[in-house]
Image (cartoon, rainbow, N blue to C red; front, side, top):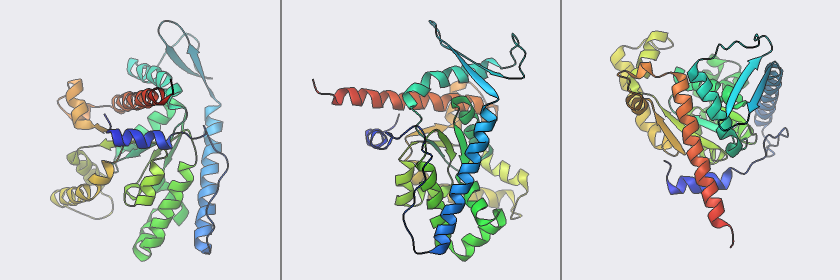
Length: 297
């Protein structure tokens, strides 16, 4: 459960409109900053338009009874047939229960880059009928690609950090988003203040799992297993205090133990998504209790 301090700041920043289609930025004399802002605006608008088109092909049917049931059927689904697993159905039912209290509040997923974190963001967005964004991917696209973003960071780190902030500023002005936030989100007080416009969840994946992903990908630097582990440990130590500012934390190791799994690899994305929704439910319940306590007699 989040601390009282985090509860208070969540209440302070969670009263946002359901979704904002207006985009505003502070004026800047720098033409490169202006160009970056315009690029972010264009990208987010295009992605949101694409989401609307995709979501129009599906309908959500909410059935009110003693037990709430959510059934998601695409236009191509044959009536009377069900392909969803019990786990997926449970996740959608929980999303229906949580959504009214959430009121479109943006969700930020913090933590080290991992397949689980990415997939979790997409699953949560689908369950809640939210938009999904990856802040690092947006920065890369604004820069002109992954390699261009890497070169940009090496040649002008200050400019790169400003781009990260611009992306977070744009996303935090909107509602109904699940955002996989890069490490830049917890590396400055400005970015942390933007993350506080929503609910933040630290997705804590074991370092051995992250190391295995890096090694299997064979990406970028040809490091040995030990070198990858050392590098990830160092990064974790640098970032953990920032991650710990999140409103809630979901540890894959703890969740595996809770579910009776011997290996964290047995934990599914749906397992984690359901746990995140339960954590969000706690946060919104605390918010409601504090609001009721603040009402005059």
